[in-house]
Amino acid sequence: MRRRRREGGLANWTWPPRGVHVSAGADFAPSGGNRALHTITLSRLICHPETKAYATRRLAEGKTPREIRRCLKRHIARRIYKLLEHTP
Image (spheres, rainbow, N blue to C red):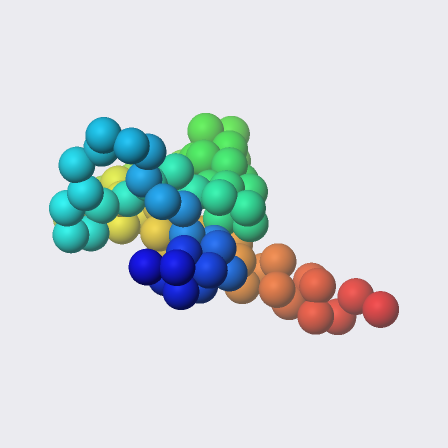
């Protein structure tokens, strides 16, 4: 159990609050870099016209809102990584 807690902190994973029923695949509040990525994604879905169009198109294709957000987070993470990679 201790080892799992140590590794959990390194992987940006948070323990669920006490009293919460945990089931397989349960999502908890994002932490650290994941929280920033989550905030950027939500902001883009609200304000960015191209992102809104992307989300509408993907919904029409049958994707769930959760899958759309996951795809957007991947896209944003790749763009941020490329920017950081080439920064001196």
